[in-house]
Image (tube, rainbow, N blue to C red):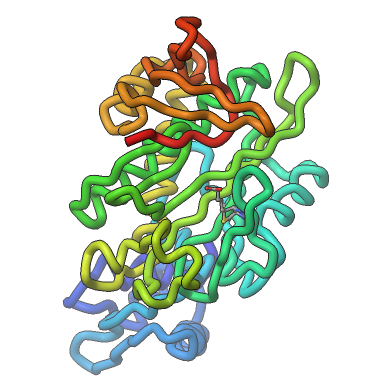
Length: 326
Ligand code: BTN
């Protein structure tokens, strides 16, 4: 952990009782003057840190910023996801940044956040609007030992992890639309873009890109998406601290990634099916020019959607756009 991460971690652990400069200095092995200098830098980032002769330093308010050291301090120890966290103020797409890291041989588990993306992308070539400071836009590098056709398992796992973290942080019950959309009352609040580099029988690396609309007011969405999109703030009626939500998501993702890698996808699939509003519904799937109409029956062992078509065949759907017909 960096010095800032250790300071924030110690301040949070001390809560209201505060921690003295001397204690921090001893714990971190640096001078009190160096501690003071770091505290000043953290204040500049917006952390409200009070200093008093009796209580020492106390963290009294967190800014709604994404700061790599803070994310590391909040997350604590994970198995794989989040052992390296990087934050950009602006980038084209966090998936692009992670792609480059993957090619450079960086270890799996690295997470790249951006406060804003200039060319954020969604599934099926769509644009993903990523305004500064309003949401969570991040990508994770994974190197799972899976066959390419099993990669849907990770998208399903990610949707389940997102559902759980959102529920834990807000108390709200979202819906999952196959394979990866998180919705409230039919409006999308989060999506996942999985991109991979694979050989015929082996995934070389996989990039899990996650976008969550967190703190937009309903009228901040462009008019053309207002009917289709919502934010957690709009659903909850109050803003959220993004760093807290981000670390809750990473913790759940880390757990679910271990489950998929350990061959326990079936457990996750059950949980996913419980939350998924696509199962049991009449659906139309658009795959390029092709459209399949039918009834969504269940999830296959590898995460594919099993659809009974209008002609009575059972089709395995591994991609495309699903519309639930009302
Ligand atoms: C979708 O539902 O279509 C997927 C949306 C994924 C958006 C995220 S934001 C972070 C990462 N970078 C991108 O360019 N896209 C993903």
